[in-house]
Image (cartoon, rainbow, N blue to C red; front, top):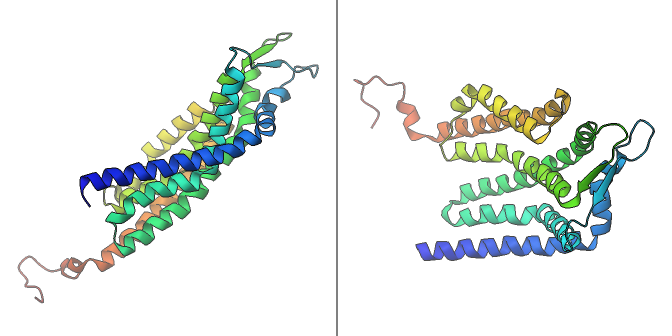
Length: 259
């Protein structure tokens, strides 16, 4: 395949991914009322010591903001719902250069990547109400809190998207191992660095004064890291068994091989 063919293939894959997001965004646009109420419910649940709501939501920072908010929600829903489409397009772009065995492996990556992305998004959605409650608890007594709708949605949507992408980490690690860029030995030796990076990431996206929310979100990502190491170790062992030079690895430098 020539370089021009590669660019045409990339263009087609990008167009299919974008088309999938746009079609799925129609669902988000149609169910906007239900979705926006679900997204802002954590704000409505925050109350003062007397049980009164302390948060007001501002949709009118500009005349176009209500439309922008609805469009943003619709596109985000489209990204989540169409994740099987755009994740597959990433792998499908690589398929022409793979052997039959490697294509089966790429399909396994796809089948693992979609549920991992959705699981990360679901975990983030579970943590949002607690995170919002903690952050708004700093509001002084007898004071109201005016939240800009677009700013709040940016926080919530990027929070969910970040964890969805973080849960794709095992797929990326196994892929790098399959390409022989990252060995199991390096991943095992670097577990402390990986743990630190995961904790920093969890602390950044969950600004909770207590460590429990951060640990609740970092723990599954760290477990997935070791799960990726286990899968990569199995694949390395299989590659080693198929390596024709393995039969000679115990020979002395002065000893002739069977050939």
